[in-house]
Image (cartoon, rainbow, N blue to C red; front, side):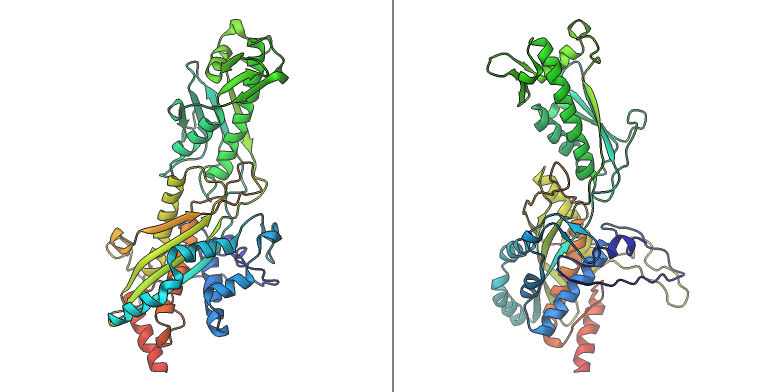
Length: 444
C-alpha cells in the first residue's frame, strides 16, 4: 500500500491540474514485497508527474521551466486544495525553481554542452519540482524537567538514528528558555522514563515532536512566571519573561529561570498548593500535514560508447518552512539526495527470469551509490513558514529522495535527445543507456 495509498494523493504535484483520476491495481508476485525506503510513495508520485512535465514540454516545444511556470500553483492561491484532496498551506514554487536554475548555471548550459560534445560525450541538464506530504497525523508528547542545579532534561518519544535530534531539540529548548545548549539533556528511547510517544517516521520529529516541545516550553514559562511572582512579591500579570530572565515590569527586580527553578525545589519558598519542582508535559496533535517542496537540478555527462552516466552537478533548493539548524538540515538533504540518485542510476532488485531467484540479495551484487559517484551538492532554502503548526516547520527527512530521481532521469534524456531517446526506466545503468541509444538510432 505504501507506493499507492501513501503516494497517490501527491499525483497532483505542484500544479493546478483541475481533474485527476487514479486507478491502483494490486498484483500477486513470487518476488519479495516492497516497502518504504525513504519517501514512502512520494518518490513514485513525483517521478510520474515530473517525467510527464518534461515529456509534455518537448511535445509542445516549451522549455522545462516554462511548462512548469505556466502550471504552478501561485503563492496567492494558498491554501490550495488539489483535485485529489490535499490542501497545500504554503509555498512559492516558481521562486524555488528560479533559484535552483540560477545556482545551477542553467543559462550557461549550451557552452558546457558544446564542450562535452567536443570531447565525445553528451551533456544534459534536467529538473524536477517536487512536493510531498509528511509530518502530520499522530500526536506526540514532550516533557521538560528542570533539575535543582538549573539544567533541564527533555524526555520525548521520537528516536534519533542519526538525524541530530539532541542538537535540534536542545536548540529549541535553549532558545525558548534562554539557556546554554550544554544545559539541555535529551532522553529518548527509554520506556522506563518516557510514558508515551509515537516514534520517528514520516519526517515528523520536528513538525510534531518539536511542537510538543514548544508546548512544554510555554507551560514551563507560565509556571515559572507564577513562581517568580511569589518570590518577587508582584502580580503575576506584571511578570515578563525574555532571554531566560523573569522581570517585574517597570522595575529592576529580576530572577533568572535557574533561580526560579531552584525556588521551585525549595518547599520553604513554595506557595500553598503549588506543585513541587518545575516540570511540564505537553501533547501536540497536528492540525494538518506539512508540505515541504523544492526544485532539484541535475547535470550529467554520458559516454555514448559505454553508456556510463556521470553526475557532474546536483543543485537543490528546498522550502522546509522555518529552519532550526541549517547544518543538520543540509545533512538530511545530502543523505536523501544520495539515496534518490542511487535509485535513478544504480539500485535494482534483479531476479533470474527462469527461477525467480533474487540475484542482487547482498551488497556484493546490489549497487549503492558511493562517494566517488556523487558531486558536491549545492543546497539552499527558501523559508516559507508552514501555516498548520506553531513553529512553522515542514518535514525534511525524505525530501531529497523524492526530488532527485526525476531530475537525474530528465537530465539523461536531455543528454540523449539528439539520438531520439525520449525515456529511460530507472535505474539508468550503462547497459540500459547503451541499448537506449542504439534502439532509438535503429528506430530512426
